[in-house]
Image (cartoon, rainbow, N blue to C red; front, top):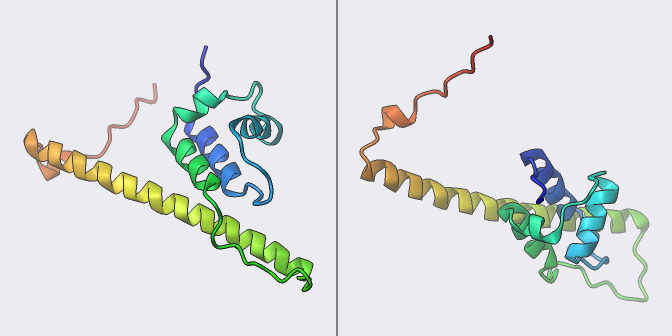
Length: 138
């Protein structure tokens, strides 16, 4: 039976991809192993399960893109460890930023669809802005 992932599981997996080491190869198999080891998700979700989630798939695709922002250093010039760490952190944050921008654009597109359908089916702004009902505490 396919594993169901919670929103928090998906967030953790996407975060894992955001900080995937630039010098380490990324495959679905390696990602599944990393999820099992680092997130202690036993058994690890399969590639098929992960690909069903748009956020995970987009983060994976973003991580697989060639890194054009990498600084090409002169082989004879050694960078101090602090600069290497900073460069790695900057690259990870740039990847995360690109992923979040893409997710934001997708959410805006979804909002336009909802806006169109609300108008099409005659839902008023007041109706759309009604607060969610609270669950009974009994």
